[in-house]
Amino acid sequence: RKKKKIPSSHFLCGMAASLRCYSTRLVPRGTGGRSSVSGITATVFGCTGFLGRYVVNRFGRIGSQLVLPYRGDDLDTRHLKPMGDLGQLKFMEFKLLNEKDLARAVQYSDVVINLLGREHNTRNFDLDDVHLDGPRMIARAAREAGVQRLVHVSCLGADKKSPSQVLAAKAYGEEGVRAEFPTATIIRPAKIMGVEDRFLNRMAGLRKRAGFIPLPNNGDAAKRPVYVGDVAHGILQAAIDDNAAGKTYEFVGPKTMTVAELATFINHAIRIKDSTLPLPAFVTPYLLQVASLLEKSPWTPLLTQDDVVQWSTSDVLTRDSGRLEDLGVTPTPLDKFALSVLRRYRSYLTQEQALN
Image (cartoon, rainbow, N blue to C red; front, side, top):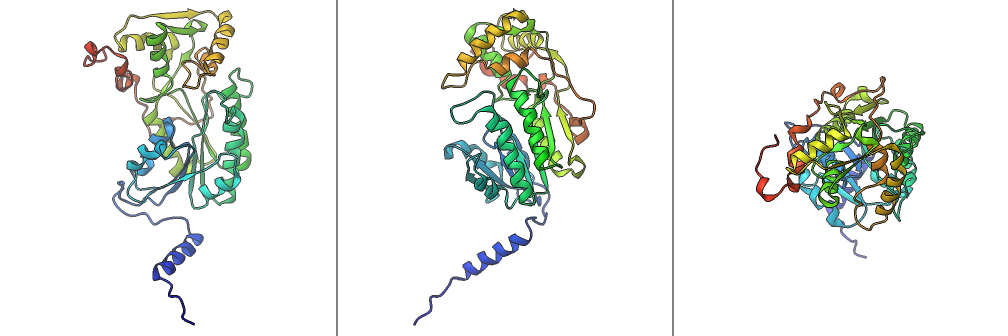
């Protein structure tokens, strides 16, 4: 009987697989650019979201290998493909609450980053699925796979007693992650601003569509919004800094502004009449009812219940948490990038005008 010849490539693949079982860490080499090898193999959950694309870009530009689990269509990931060198990005479909999918996503990684988040319930997942059960399962899968570092992104103001359902769910999620992976690094960013954000864009969108920006609690709440590029840089630094293991960091911008001041800044930036609607505290329950109706829209809601609660609540920092500066990142002022976000809301007559 004639024996079937096995191609030599099969032996090479088998040898590579066996070596991979013994070591999941690559040998760093190169000058540090995207065509180098950083020695990091990272899994990024939530890679297709607003913050995800910036984190993927930060890791890709230093030559990291990335496993990018995603839900939905392949078109949701195509903007990520140029962010890493050829063969450095591995896309895989997954289900959040499927233990086998999570184990497969983290089995070869040194670093796992969880960016998953949602502002309201959907027909597929509620807030507990996204902020509590999912992160806990990811942390368990990372621990069982022997992952060295886990970075979990929460939210500034996460508190079990918070009136915000999102902040309460985030607090329970942090507790679940730390129970499964004690050395996890927790990141609590303030409201994140960027081209694709749901903060500046939401306020400017309300001004253009509704004709005014509502100000819960008269707009007196103090906020410290942070630039998305700084948050992504801080996440990278937290992932590679061994001293960050087990710590909690709160990422905030360099300047404190009230919600009313932010609304006025947005109106001036888009060259439109300053039109705000201060609402006293007793009106907030009615505004929440309006927001709950808007959340049922099949499209991205113009306003959510979480927006109403957070726009009426000041940002409060804790003393024992770290800051961006502790990771070597200098926060970017709002006026440095605001125009790149808000220019689209200007009239064609004022497109080229400076911010001030």
